[in-house]
Amino acid sequence: MNAMKIKKSPAEKVFTVFNYILLTFIMLICLYPVWYVLVASLSDSSLLMQHSGGLLKPLGFSISAYKKVFDNPMILKGYGNTLFILVIGVMLDIFMTSLGAYFLSRKQVMFKNVIMMIIVFTMFFSGGMIPFYLNLKDFKLTNTLWGLIIPFMINTTNLIILRTSFESIPDSLIEAAQIDGAGHFKILMQIVLPLSKAILAVMILYYGVGIWNAWFWASAIIRTRELYPLQVVLREILMQNDVSAMTAGVGAADQDAVATTIKYATIIVATLPILCVYPFLQKHFTQGAMVGAVKG
Amino acid sequence: MKETFSVRLKKDFRRNKMLYLLVVPVLLFYLIFQYRPMYGALIAFKDYTPTLGVADSPWVGLDNFNRFFNSVYFNRLIKNTVLLSVYNLVFGFPAPIILALLLNEIKSKKFKSATQTVTYLPHFISLIVVTGMLRDFSLTSGLFNDIITFFGGERSALLQNPKLYRSIYVASSIWQEVGWGSIIYLSALSGVDSELYEAAQIDGAGKWKQMLNITLPGIAPTIIIMLTMKIGTLMNMGYEKTILLYNPATYETADIISSYVYRVGLLEQDWSYSTAIGLFNSIINLTLLLIANKLAKRFSETSLW
Image 1 (cartoon, rainbow over the protein chains, first blue to last red):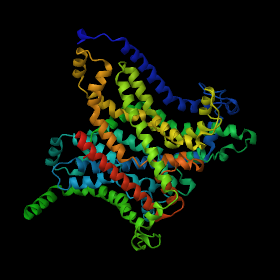
Image 2 (cartoon, rainbow over the protein chains, first blue to last red):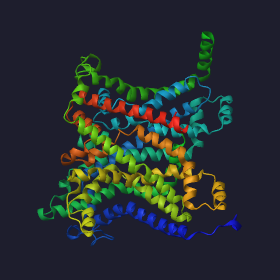
Image 3 (cartoon, each protein chain N blue to C red):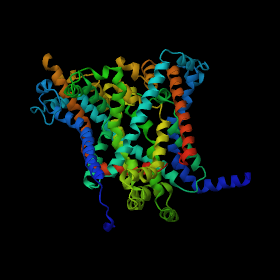
Image 4 (tube, chains in turn orange, purple):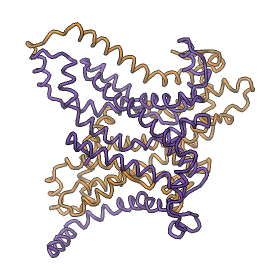
């Protein structure tokens, strides 16, 4: 093949250079806002106030904004609530999704197609926001963290991704276990799931990130402030500009300046877990997106 | 025939009894949290009061729908929803395809994977944070205005300006999703037969011709599937982002059907009316999806089902 290497035309060389420059520029645009927030959060608040334009490194250096963020009991409570939803939620999500995916991956089951249709139909039609909310009320799932876990246990896209993956497990393995007298639940737990570690990692990540970033239903059904998950606390701070809990004791003139760095620090505190695990998990995320690409 | 069916049924039940037992919790989940709300959507045709419940609230026929069609907001909501969706489709749909094509031409593996890592990142940042940053950067003293003045423009509160709202919405959506959206096209691109390129090079076809005659036809089925899905959710623009990004000053261009449902339903508790509007929106979505799927089937033999 190398012998046939064809010389690049000048136009192609220009394109290659242009392509590298363009993609580098795109990378900068993707990364810079996050970088800006990070260095601004570490800046001295009054210096930041006077500054105009972009930042490459912190102006002065101060972690006082972070101290204020961690002194805010709402942030810590929000973290706790989100972690509770995350741990219990991901376990239940994986369990329920596996049950469905295992059933749909079996062959020679009479009602499989009917059940598949019942499930897939919900991807294209739903009762809508208000009936969903009234339904939660009927089941007393409002103003409780369980209302953010149970109604969201199965994501249909994830279910189909997992089913596609289960289908690739050789039937002979499952049949052999059946001959040994193992029931379906045992086969799922002891053969299918251990063979699907890679895709389960993807599922954990998908559900986990979804739960971490979810806010809408929490803001709709949670009334007690002590039950707010992190994103809802974050929303109060970012949208309603409610930093009063953290600027107590700061002179009125400095309020605005301090509020800005506190906002940025809060963003970083709420995003850091994802930013930290992300580079290590990126490969898995991508894998899942590819499996998901398989027509379901 | 009847006999064989009942025989088959018995056989299937005997064979798969335990399997059906496993799927019961899953079916219950869908029944309770998906199909029960669909039944609950009947309140769109009723005058719902919580004390009476769905079944006993009196029927009012199409009154709620007529109220919406005659509402002063009707035209504005339809126009805003359609325009936001169309802009999002026209600019947002090709973006990840172009990014994938550009990435596909990169020979350096390191550079390619670095670009991928960085461009996927915004997908994982929560909407609260993304819109929080947008609000802050759009302030008169914010980063966007610093950039605008650098290029000789004047400072203004960008998110208070209804004329800029759609551009900010669409551009930030592209920023957040372009990398993640490109994954599926990259995997389609890696499936294109490399011998075709070698043959084309021998025939003297340049890069541009190769792209038009080999690459694009190679990933066309993926593009068509994705486009069909996109059209099916065309009127289903995200209310989450809208709710976080708009304010009364920009309702004029920003308020869409689903955000209106949210305000009328969850905030003002006008249950039946908001459910009717939501149902109207869902039915349009389903219709669009069916049409798109039919067109895809007719013209390309690729379809969702």
